[in-house]
Length: 177
Length: 453
Image (cartoon, rainbow over all chains, first blue to last red):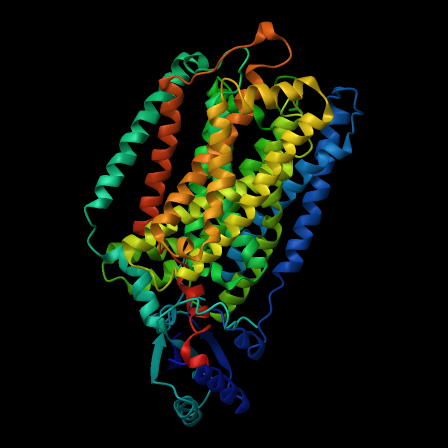
């Protein structure tokens, strides 16, 4: 299925923000926006939220329990050895390994989750709406498939009024993002 | 909040975003000067010497090193601690400054993280070789084995060290790579050659700069930064406990962990300074790595240098104040005076005295001085590790055990080899990866610049 998009290119951050606001006021659905660096206002406007911190917390919790359980199993259950007269379960000296492995697990697991959720992995080719978005332009993408020709035209007009330097119509066979 | 008019602009010259992209990518696209192949050749030669020395070490055993029954830890451990210290630059620099929201880190963090990765790889070589039978190095992994299963000693700082360094290497490499994603995508979209485009497309993992990508990217950087900040303190504390749990005079001291951590950050920042001064000079990046940036690093260096001086003094003071004759002997007869007195005074001069030159604004603003002082700190920090490792071991409790230590050409070769490895890594980094975080530079480009006023 071919999908059509109207793409507004902005070269100024403030005009770009007001472009998004205007489109939202007129109740246009914004497909996505692309920026050369993170713009925090965009996250508020498009209600983008990340639950990675929550996930990371649970990864950490899992790692702490798993590491301590492993240390307990190896040092107390499986093959107990007395080191320097310390008890088998010498908890204080397990703390260091636990901290390090927790940090390690949280890092690797969060990275994996990030990669899976954002669909970023080696060889992945996500649709690039306009390649200038990684350089110096701010890009708003509105899907026009779902609306009639007149409102598609209006979306383009609106962006132009807000200072878009270019409005492009593009068709894509398949969208990956 | 970040628009401090006192600090001055973070990027000078009112750059547009397009200009920033071009300026940072330019070193990857211009024809190389003659210096690059020359330095690369030297590094490769050093690497080959190192490879040969490692071959001899593995083939004949560590008897080819200068270590003996008394001085069981020689150059290998000195160099290991030195490299790990340098490896703290990346995390200290980019992670501490990230969570403290110090925006001036932006033009330097990428290079500092790259240095960390290469330095930690160099460091990890030494303990592995020091095991003697390096092909059995995997014994240190706690895995279910046919030897019992006998587990490793989880109470031992040497094992903690292994976990800490492995984790540190993988975490700093991931953090570095994550930061690179948007910039690799920029290179992909900017490049005209097909092969280059395909390569950078592969490594940028399909980054598009979508708002969905950015929000997760930001929150992931803060998660990684926040938890890895612990590692800046923990890794070198654990290295310090390797020494502090030993009952050698001069090692058995509670000051070791903080003393080592501060020393690590000191040598790391000094190495960042050395590299930044050179990169800035070679690639004419004075608009990005401004005088103010170097000034800030120099100020941090004076501060740390004062802490180092205090630590050296307090060690000597405590040796005297404790009244312990072995401690007294180690510090007063075997360090301040004695066989290795040059190394002790070299350390004091390089680490505690010479950096005081940074009190002068003129010196903080002169690249030759910055280079000289930062190099002297690097040398001083190496001497410090030599002092700690060798002078405590060579004359301990039993005079009949006393022995001298001199490195062999094989010892020197492994060290020179790691220097070569580090050099090769940094040169390839400067050639194939954007040296500064382009996307982060864009987000701070307006700070302190004219249109803001």
